[in-house]
Image 1 (cartoon, rainbow over the protein chains, first blue to last red):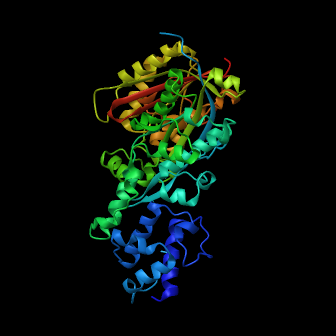
Image 2: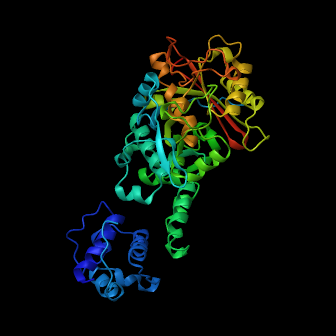
Image 3: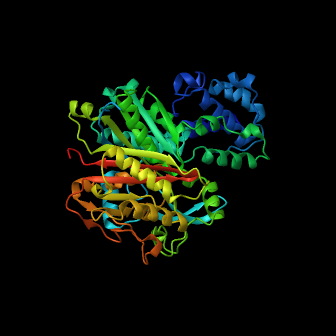
Length: 89
Length: 412
């Protein structure tokens, strides 16, 4: 997956978890939790969806890497290499 | 015993398979409209159920709906509608002095089944087990969700009482108001049971799950050919207050709760017992200081199991056999068995009789079972009484729990 696909993948997961939030104008370099309402349970949902959709296991100590969309791209990039984007699951 | 404060109902919020408000529900009961339909559930396949169609997003955001449970959502909808019906502004609620008491038959099965189904797709790797499981399955979940949704900081918990639970939520609300623990209560019951396959499978294993070619005719208490329970979801919460508080705020009073009783058979896990039901009814009447002959309508519990209906009818004959005035009806014949909501919903369906003077019937009796013959059983179509002053609402459940609630029209 390239950068755009990873961002689409993460946003699609966030949309499932926080369907009331507007995601089209999310800045990639600002913490997600500073832009939309996401609490720790939501964050665990994101991790769970990444696991279910892409088989990506994320250890707890790495959760901080997913704070921004840019962070998601750098951290998930190698793990999502060669995997197909799944949206609207 | 000291004179206790008088307790009144000032608002109703409900979700029934045949109506999402009291006027809609009442209209369905007077026009003979069933809420039972074909329904499919995991592992069980095609069966029948009562399914609610209330607008869950009226009082919840999509995210809250996703995070919570169906029972929580039913509770929130009913609470919001009840508060509005009672003319209470959310901003002006005595939040710390409001109690939420929700009866449930069971809770947690839906989420547990869902999670097991989920991890089964991943060879039971428990890293796929949801962090939502515990907050969704704790026994206080529906009441807790109501407290969160409306910012109510008083006591909020559930009362597990099998199929008597709807009455128990209301009774508990009245008791807490009389004790002065709270100043306002939401009391009643909810059930999300149609979302678990276990309840259908267990009734089927017990030979107590209804089947019929026509879904609307499947729930048939007292009929000779009745063959079991139609499982339904639903909810009903009342705003309950002390009469003096209701008067002070100029509230419209729907009914006064004048008596109740709860007892136990101490006899069997599933089989009911007419003798204890009889005692329960008489205890509720005694608290209400009424004789059986002073009750206008008995809202029966009958679920359409062969033995259950028979036992209840035996108890009804013993208590009301000499009362020419008393009519008996049944609401499950329209909506199936809404489990934890049943007691509260069935009382609600009858409350408008104080205004319209009608008794809704029990439907689907083609041939009355001689063992279910009860004096003044209202069959097929509504009966006009002109004036209704008193109601007795019955709700019984597994492990032998019995409950009875007596209400009377406001101002009588």
